[in-house]
Amino acid sequence: DALHRTLVLHPSTATDRPFLCGVPSGAVPFASLWGGLYGYPQLMVRKTAKAHGTSKLVEGDYAAPADVVLVEDVVTTGGSVTETIATLNAHGLRVVGVASVFYRGPPDARPTFANADGTVAPYAYVLDLAGLEALREAHADGTGVGDADACALTATAAYADAPTRALAAAT
Image 1 (tube, rainbow, N blue to C red):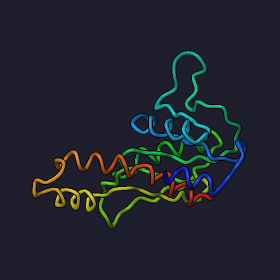
Image 2: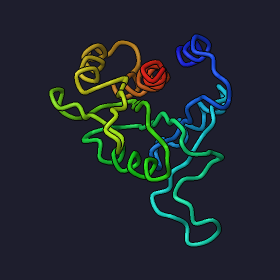
Image 3: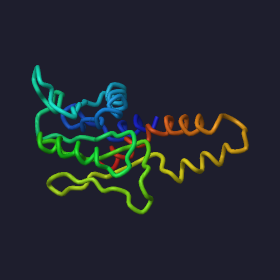
């Protein structure tokens, strides 16, 4: 698939690969899946530190400074992504790309994501409201799968391309 092709085109060692990290908590399974499939290291950010154990906000085997590609399921204003970037930056981690499956904000106000040092993390998404409407229209005649099913299947299949674009932009 597209993510695998990008990793092959940009070979790296375990020491210089970016970490994959899902925005808590909906995108964590996607980051975990891709990290496991393609051998990328993973981090997990908690919304709040645990009251027991290590009490960490960022879990994973990393040494700062390190690069991270952040994965999100849905972006509207980008607030959750911005909060997660701030947490990662506070732990010596730099976000080099952001990928989401769906952008549901206004087409003329796509968010920009920046690290605390001002460097911008490129943002890639698979589907937006216009794309969703096009899918609905394509299946409005009742042929094929149902409207909601077509949207869900297309978004799920295409989601793999978002982290590919973010990784490509970061390299």
